[in-house]
Amino acid sequence: MIDIALDILSWILLSLGGACVLIGGIGGLRLPNFYTRIHAASLTDTMATILIFVGMMLQAGLTLATLKLFAIMLFLLLTGPTATYALANAALLSGLKPDAGTASDKPKENTPE
Image 1 (cartoon, one colour):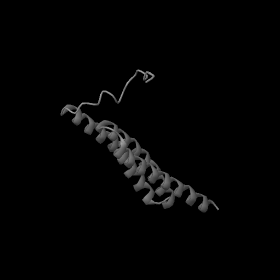
Image 2 (cartoon, one colour):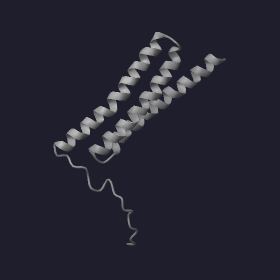
Image 3 (cartoon, rainbow, N blue to C red):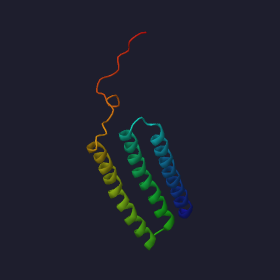
Image 4 (cartoon, rainbow, N blue to C red):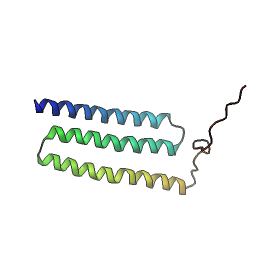
């Protein structure tokens, strides 16, 4: 009974991780500029990494493969956001300016036409 519950939970996690990857891909296509695209990709990839690797660890059981999967997940969780930061910083230093219209603290005014 426990094996069935672990299988169901692992497949739910794997499916949610796949959905995160899909959402990140759509965000990469739909978002307006470079900085918002890498932000969306970084967030969804980090979440997908956690979900997919935990799902694979549940499938593997308590074996050496689980330890290896955990080590790979930890490596990806440390290097993914760091690489995104380095990419955004390099883009900023090379002169790619963020769009002024993407981040605003002021609410939009409702003006009747």
